Image 1 (cartoon, rainbow, N blue to C red):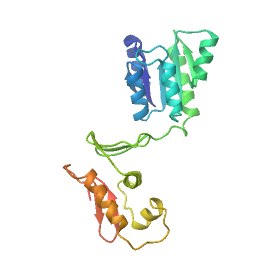
Image 2: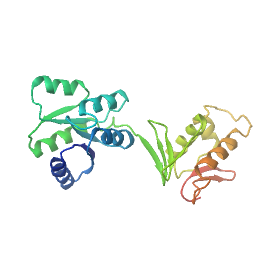
Image 3: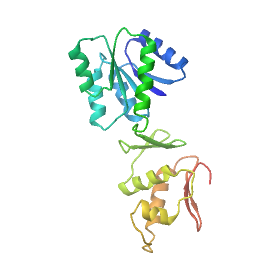
Length: 225
């Protein structure tokens, strides 16, 4: 599993990270609510482990923001607050499970395994990447080598389709049907024009071109022609 741990207690975070890594999981650690929210919105995780009491943004408000944004990644809340009302509030805020501190690591691991299996098919894809080109599907932010690229709506749709079919040949027919929703060829240069505009934005000024035209065949987004 790829897990995001949002925990401000460095000692507790180090202990959890070590244990989860030794159990075969990949762990990213955020030290406060702001950093945690940014990572949760921009990266893909199978489970989030969120401490309730966090600096800058508390755990429950962080969870509410994620759920309001449509994020369905399973969340395990960690908290020293053990009253029934505290646990109910955590679950009603959008948490999937609530574990009271102190806890046994074996129990935490078992709860994470259950959450992961229960939500395997519901974790949304948040980013599409090829080399240093990245499209965030939630914010529609496009970057290459960390540089922001501004695209028009049709250019964005075209790039998303090409990224979803990266390293594959994409024909004009595929683009007409899937991007323009046309089931006939309008006999115009609309595709060539949009491809040209997109290429000028994602390739111009960068060392390696990614968008290639295969004469009489179609197009391909790839690190090599």
